[in-house]
Image 1 (spheres, rainbow, N blue to C red):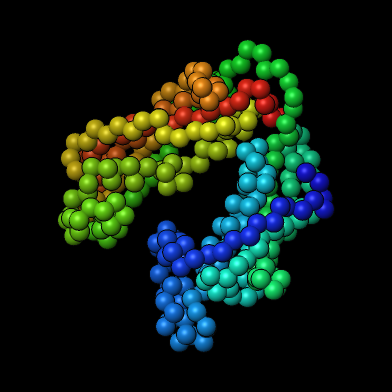
Image 2 (image 1 turned 90 degrees about the vertical axis):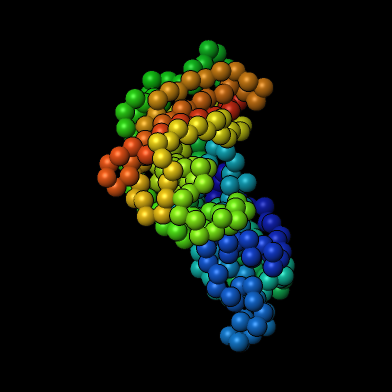
Length: 292
């Protein structure tokens, strides 16, 4: 990457269905984004595209361009003009600076969204942390290193997180999964998965993956297990103590597979154990593509 390089422009056209799904995803039901009458009452000719939807498209543009060796560390957007739902928009950007730091480049970018007439309706800036790649013979490789295990605090508690459960929380979950039992105070068994600090992005793991110097080719959940003493219910205040219990690897069709196994202990407001959950996450790496 070099200063002055242009990001490949992307043309997008947001539909009313996109806006409705986005509103549900971020829990923002401001009617001017999907209700024509509400938008007209505010002097607009039709529903308006959410500003955060446009920011998310810019973030996706960056990640697709930079690839798996990059981490987006900062994104700032300024919404200069509204865009109508159904309008054709173009997203793009330019690299403004590249600062090498060891095996990592700090890449600064300017970003924009333009309407069909070329007027920039969103401008922004972003910072990427990009690991430089090296061509090398990996030789014998161990991904589950002692350094990685130490970073994950394997065998020790990685943190505690507290989550109150309300009836509104349970109803939103039931609506999302199509469970008709709205208003029921007891949570469905699968709701235990909601009280996971990694899924909630409160326990961040990506920085530890900088310790794996190979290109990532895929990944996902390997397994989820729940053993509970009693059901969760509205009014509970649950504290989750999470810890990594194992890190191991094996060869697979997608490359070298790295497994991380984590256990959560869930306690209620009286300190009584409610449940134990155990989950495994797997990542695949291409050992032929080393990243500095």
